[in-house]
Length: 230
Ligand SMILES: [Zn+2]
Image (cartoon, rainbow, N blue to C red; front, side, top):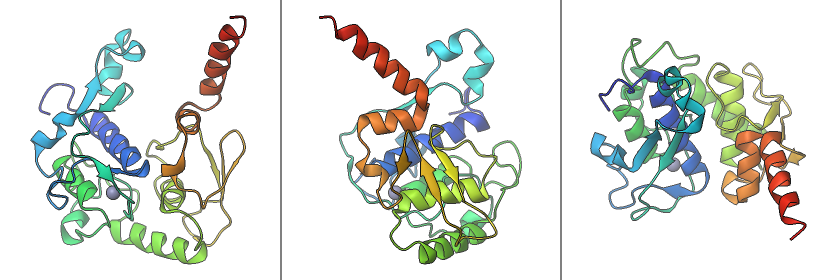
């Protein structure tokens, strides 16, 4: 933090990475969950790769949230069923007046990332207010009682935060509508995703497809076909 690469886009990248980590069923620091990720030094476990092949050719991409982000140091991680009600995005002052978002670690991370700042360098005007996003989560959950929280959050992000980069660009999401939380939802990867299934049940291949779509599938196929003759 504090370097020339400490940009809004890279902070959003860190936010997406932390959300995915929670979706996969983990808390990063279980020692003091209420204070976890509440101090900038806690972020030393999150690395942004400024020399990744994708950004080496174009240094501007290093600042635009397009590089790789890793979580390292799992010594204090533990299993966690995330109950967050909203994505880890800049909500401005709403975060200070409504500190209960269902997950202490991600709330603390939001504060350290500056997502409670008024509109400015880090925080742009949110696409949805925090109370509106929480109400949408509540209404959508009531209309779709069997859906996992990770599926609800995928729908909410698409419905209320369409300008934010998705956590899983490889997924196609249809039927997530801001004005109508009761609308039928369809999530697809290579086939149809069961919305009752939590992201924490994803296999490595499932997650690869969610992140890279058919590009991941074709890479896997290439690797596999090369092995066949052996
Ligand atoms: Zn969580």
